[in-house]
Length: 199
Image 1 (cartoon, rainbow, N blue to C red):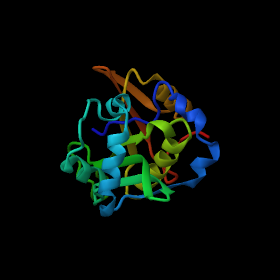
Image 2: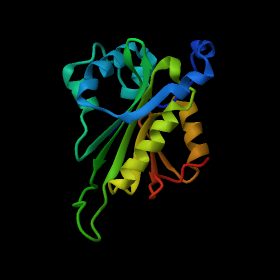
Image 3: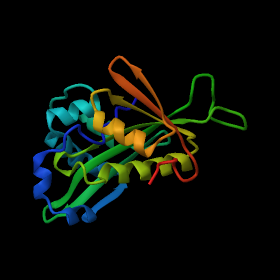
Image 4: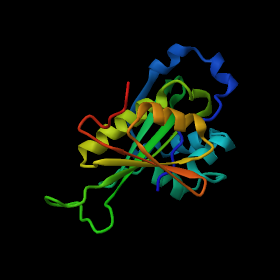
């Protein structure tokens, strides 16, 4: 299951110092193989709290295998990055991925077959949280998942991530939430527009 972190329970104080217009310069685009080092730097900059909310565990120095998994796109995995241009090159400030899983007993092929479910995982850099980047990535990711045949999105959220859970309840009033061992599984139906994500 992909772990999900879109919003931290408390936005860091440094947000106030960043000009609001700065988020307009953030591009959401598919990951490329040459993004590996950028994603490694992004993971290294995340605070321990943000890493725990995304991966549900503390991770040390990102391993090559982890970085490779977070930039690889194929017929089952989709990866989007939030990237801002700097004088020194592109900087990753957000990462979103979905993994398409066919429910048990289904083939994902042919009429009447079980359709793939998109398992979602998202994380935003600490000093860029609370500015809508996570929602922009999520909307794009769900539209792409629906276009690839997924009819449902699933994400795991730590039960302590109250801010994110409140946002989900507000944005996805029809989402189903199930608590299990300190996490909340969130399920929502996908449509051709991605989801019933409320404005």
